[in-house]
Length: 150
Image 1 (spheres, rainbow, N blue to C red):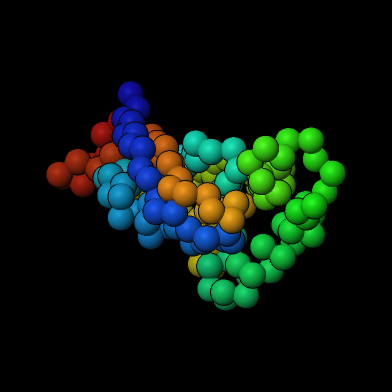
Image 2 (tube, rainbow, N blue to C red):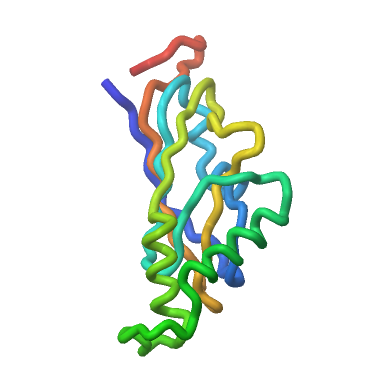
């Protein structure tokens, strides 16, 4: 038998760019600490922002990811869908390239990200607004006696 926890959270509006959100997720979803073994799935409910896992130590990585995304799909490309502004369709393309979800293993109540890894919100709109994430954890939880309960 598997145990599940699920919660939808809203991140505050962020400027265009790549934003580390690992701490935000853990602060809003402390149930991760209950799992002996499992997986956390993070899904963004938007089509103009994405999620990715990448290096979390050097802030230059955030700048370089934004630069690369803009080179792959620059504003001003000849798109048909332009009713929401010049950043809208490039944002949709970038969101598709980065993806709408990430999954991270959990062991002994901790995300098993690598030493230099973090979860990023990839905000592709100039003014994207609040972003909703659906957080789902599934696995075996720790009991008060320290044994796993499945």
